Length: 244
Image 1: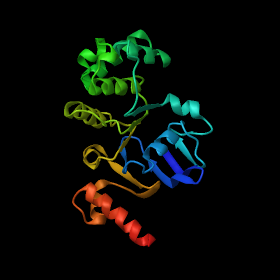
Image 2: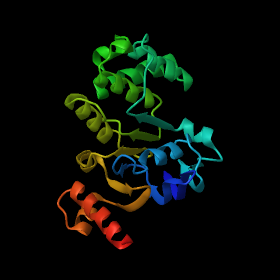
Image 3: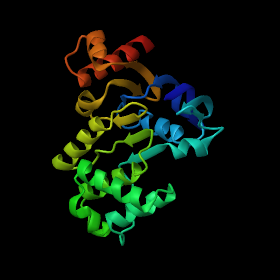
Image 4: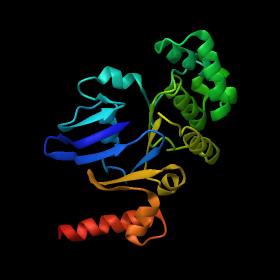
């Protein structure tokens, strides 16, 4: 469903992403883990065709991100922690507007909104203007907007950032429910406990470099640690020691 081959992204002398290669398959939740500045957002923006790589290649759903960006955009949904909504529109109006961009019929649109209302517990957000939303209400509608067309690849970049405990739980449950054949969810986070709950495999990034790609049990076994956060620090320490 997705491949990255030797992806590198530089800004002048600064390297944000260095020689990153991995593959993610349909039916899984694939985690991108690392602290702020690790290169996660640069990688996701490259895969979403918002950035062009300095070198290397990538495909999403079989489409090359540089040669066929429009095809990639048709099959992805993207959510990050800083997306906004038109303050004068209700959630329902936002979702209907985006459904129109994907040429969904009114019947398809209303059926999909009803489904997302149930899965994301949208409730009164649907008929409340976005300017009156709390952070959690806004993020639920942002997520619903991103998946209104049922994309093959859903990209979540720190989507739980700033959410209260109830909205965060709704998001994590939605991610787990979204696991399906011919669907892939990329879940980027620096909160390791979230990845432990929802991800089938993870890629760990540090300073723009890929440290490992594996299942969480295998990473724990490799490092001899009992949780992913401690395993992350063990991997980083090992890289730093080898560099000395």
